[in-house]
Length: 237
Length: 300
Picture 1 (cartoon, each protein chain N blue to C red):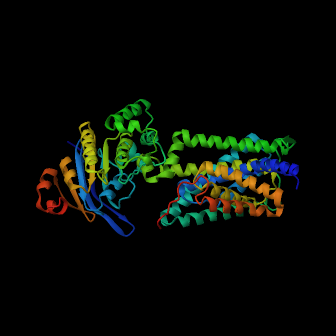
Picture 2: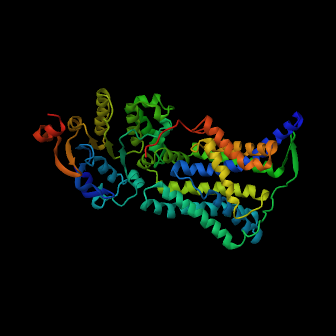
Picture 3: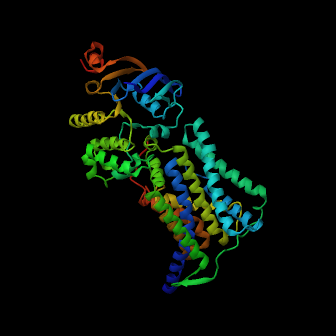
């Protein structure tokens, strides 16, 4: 399987603070790859360099073989890389329907958009019931579903999921991860950022662990799950 | 004052207030669409209004170009001036300074530049008048006397507002602009080109200001200081909540009517106080403005 996303030795900084140094990772087409690490380790920054919200100072990012590190963020979206950000970044004052329409912002194929809307309802039937409701009034779980749905409306090839479990009840986390598995089976490649290492290692095939902006460890998720140091630091024993 | 006279004053105050209010409403709208998306109060809005008036004056009176060229040329000039200011000056300032205050100061800079340019041309030395394109004959509405020009101003302003309302709510571009106002990061993540969106918004804000200038120019004497009218537009925006488009429009009409009422019922010398009185009353009763959302405390 070839690599859909290849991050090669990238560094990034906020002002004088070095956020990432020489980070490399690969996401093979069709895989779920997890990126783990504690708070502030640089996980979200890594996703934001791919989405071109944070510039890199060195290294390269390739998507389907093409270097994208000089692209504007909207071109990244057009090419099929969609980030599902953490922290309920919905358009709060817009209806659920308008949020989903915004997801298809860069598309103009009406038939395809309609098909994808039905697909979103298929994954998240609840959203169909809430179409006219303002996104800001949805529950935390529903907002997370809306965020994933919004990204699906763009017709993505690669989904960058940032902490999908954050602030959700265990039952909802199970539901969201079941959907993530389904999306992957239906052909989506996924780079998953999580603090919840147990569930992330359980649902991915390969994982990377960031510490203080540097890649500390990587390996097949199965192997990392049995690794003593990983168990101590990230799996609570 | 007997009741009969008071009733006439009331009608006249509302009629005249709606006309001047429509100009304040347009300028307030121009200010608010920028504030909602850039979080910057554009202190050059009044000078953009003034400069657009002079562009029209120059093309129409001095170059004697036909009006069907003058009108679009003025609007295009206003659009380009504001869009390029956003793209070239503000993006550059934002790159080197993280604080929004620098952007605000840059807009003050633009206001001085525009005033200086108009002064340099010499057109601003003496007050000039722009010929009216519609008759200024009076008509009576109820017991209020207004001119055909007044009615044209009000009608045109309402049409412009309706057009922008439609654009913001029912077009893809308008929806993207609202998205940028609500959550710029999320807007970028669905593929909105932030720079282009900001340019378009600033350009449109320029066009709205230019329309206001074209509408009011025949009614006033044009000077390089005519941009100070923007104080009333800021008052209108504050009354409306500063981040609400309907609020800006309603605020504009309120300020216009209050101003005229104060002039008729109290004294023409008290007119300058009217907008501040309106702000004071509204902010005491509803600190978030008439159409402002819930009060939120921002951590700094």
